[in-house]
Length: 128
Image 1 (cartoon, helix red, strand yellow):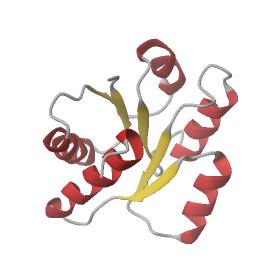
Image 2: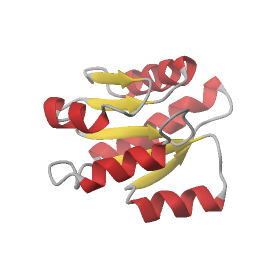
Image 3: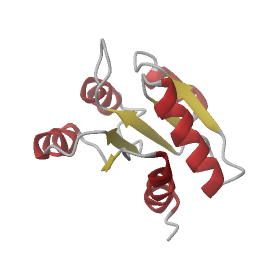
C-alpha cells in the first residue's frame, strides 16, 4: 500500500486529517505539504495512492494544483480528492471540471473527522 499525500496550508487541519486517517488505517504512510507547488514532483517521486487536496490555500489554490497534476502525463490519472470547509455548489462544480475524483467537506468539529476518514478510506481503498 502506497502513501497518501495531504496538501493543506492549515497545520491544524493536516493534524486532524492525519489523526483520523491513522485511526482508520494504522499502517498508513502519510506525506504532508503546506502548499501545492511541489505536488507533481512529490507524486512522481513518492507514488502516493491518492492526494487529499485543500481548495483554499494562499498562493496557488487547490484548483490550480489539480490542473497541474492533470496536465502532466505522468500524474494525469492520479487519484485526487478535494477537501474544503465549503459546501458551495460552485466549488464542487469547479473541482469536478478541474478533474477531481471526489469532493469531501472538512468537518466543523474534531469529533466528525472520523466520518471524513471513513469517506476517504472508502474512496481510496474501497473500504466500507
